[in-house]
Amino acid sequence: MEVIVMQDEAERVGLVADRIAGLLAAKPHAVLGLATGSSPLPVYRELIRRYEAGALSFRGASAFTLDEYVGLAEDHPERYRHVIEREFTSHVDLDPAAVAGPDGTAADLPAACAAYEEQIRAAGGVDLQILGIGSDGHIAFNEPGSSFASRTRIKTLTAQTRADNARFFGGDADAVPHHCLTQGLGTVMEARHIVLLATGTEKAEAVHQMIEGPVSALWPATILQHHPHVTVLLDRAAASRLLLADYYREVFAGKPDWQGI
Ligand code: F6R
Figure 1 (tube, rainbow, N blue to C red):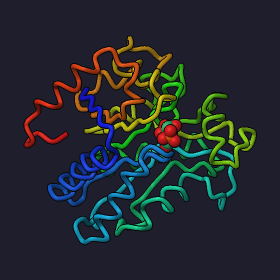
Figure 2: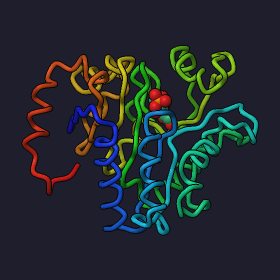
Figure 3: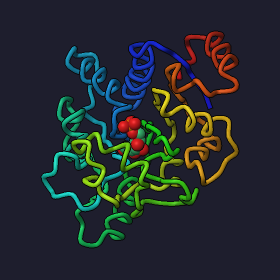
Figure 4: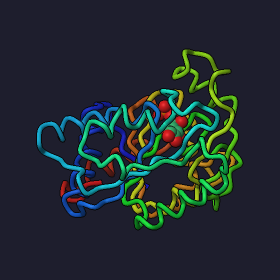
């Protein structure tokens, strides 16, 4: 796991955008994994900026989102299908038909989950997955106790996650759905490169556990210790509980430029 602690947001975002640009240049039909929530927004803004400047095209690419609320009306603005479109995909030349997410409105939710797994598989799997992390250590919506082998399925959100996400629902945690569909930890782990972004002290404990804690279902993100290519980008606050922070800084400072992330 590569841990990069960088206070400057533009620098952190630049590294991720460069990596995505490199991927698209090498593989125009790349499959991107997109997270919703606040953490990836600066990356999406930078990708939009580069697209508008003519430096980047997503024309051949496709994208899969991680998760979706269950129980929100089709036109609810916080459905992740709408969020990702509003924040990112509608602003670039990604074909709208090539952007998929689990269908939280399906009458048969298990069938919708199985179909989503099949869709990701048929696309050849995710080349680069962007992730955030919950303050309780979830990735996608795999809450504590999730199986490390899990696939896309229905989950119940923790009270902590519903409180954390209340800011998207007018500050009302009761308005946040209790259920969601989410890619499983087993699904996420199949992405070829995982880039996780976290900022702020409220993420510091989860980040410490993910990188330095014992691998445990209590902190689902710890499964990433078993992935061969994970890049974690942190600001100082999110890195504030790391025991080996100085070492991670030293490693990154000594890294040759050609290596990228
Ligand atoms: C969103 C997702 C979640 C978020 C996490 C952090 O699609 O899967 O795991 O990444 O809850 O959210 P933010 O970035 O809003 O702090």
